[in-house]
Amino acid sequence: MMHPSITIVVVREDPRIQDAQILLDESSAAFAIFSGDSGQSRFRTEDLCSARGEYLIARTAQGEPLGCGAFRRFDYGVAEVTRIYSRQSRIGVGQAILQKLELGAVTAGYHTLITEAPSSNKRAVRFYEHNGFTPAAPFGVCAQSPGVCYFSKALCSITA
Image (cartoon, rainbow, N blue to C red; front, side, top):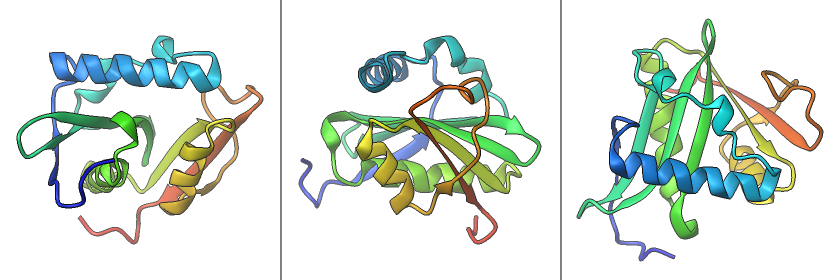
């Protein structure tokens, strides 16, 4: 657990840099533990490099990477949140990443966020529920997959 006084700095970064690739590999390994699939076959860094996508890295004030998160275009007005990951369950990292992703999504013109999590990943399910996401109808490539929780969140009340 991080000391509460440690500053978390979340900034948009290129998902192709070394720190990003390491964090994405770590997140893929973590996702594979819960779902049996790393999700790498459905994840393209190019989706995050456009004006309609965003990749963030959370760092300490000294530059140490703590975690990452992203959104990509799903449909007109709808962005999919993906790859929210925090090293060693550090308190506040996921929350800081999600808040910045929400602001970025509003700025990019989205009105809704969607995401999914394996139902076996109770920590992720609680995280999304705690942060205002509500259950949603299945969507995307995994729509027919059992054991997946789907969520959405309206962004209309968030100010950029």
